[in-house]
Image (cartoon, rainbow, N blue to C red; front, side):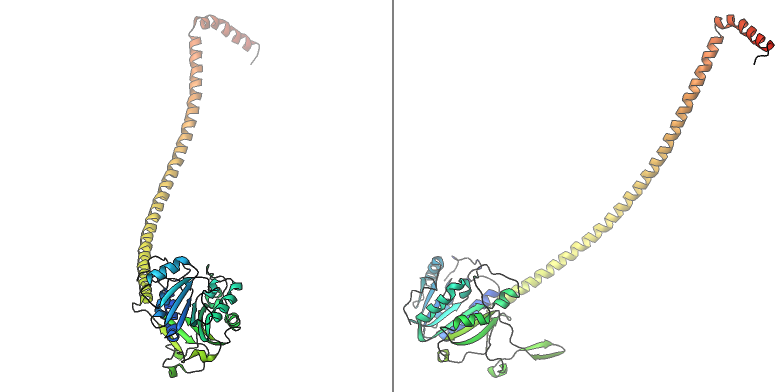
Length: 363
């Protein structure tokens, strides 16, 4: 048997999908098998078909019904060797089965996928096809724990319930109920909710919580999923169900996955330490470069200051040089003039004027 034609997309479980979902889904079918032995069974929303096949191993006959024709065709081809197993494409709110034609209806993670107005119709259909002493085994997520506490919204869920809301939906057709709570516990744990005062040890099991400082009996954990036995009367429940039901797979896939994640976390921690050491080395190098840059800037500043002083001195020297050049030019003009014939001709008259000025007492 293969199931490679269907891919896990989050809406329905298919064999091969990893994680907690394996424990949750397979455990529910394993739990339901005790009620399916030798009976006519309806697996509502049968999906890939693996659950119907598990029930068919002990049931007289099993009908798997799913709204998805592709899933139905896949299941029919994959599990065709089961002579007491058939698959039908139909809505769980309009079952293609006669009245009172089955002894057990199994409906796991189905009701929350319907819009609220269709949910009573589905339960009415379950009641219609069940024999008078028939039994419904139904599971649904506990909205308070599954969604509200985790602040999580499953895109495939149309309407989830708390316990009181689910009980109110079941009551018109199934007044007799027994409740179980399911959640992951090193595998999957199913624990009877209506027997909290019964010592677990008397049923061959006990649960403790605490630490080195002390231990105490463990109270029932808040369920992630409700698993309900529902019927018209308690007589339909038959043999007493266990107070505790545990499930784990042989390969220990979830523990192996946790170990893989732990190893990966250690590897990433080591890588982070290496990167941190490399960053520290780079930081030291950067500080060294910054010191070199600061020293270079200081030297450049000093050089610029020296060059500025030299430029100012050169400017002053140039001004003095220009002044001296002008004075020298003037002296050269005077010398040239006094060496000319014009000067020698004018000289006697200049001396005469100076003499007359002295005689007159002029300055």
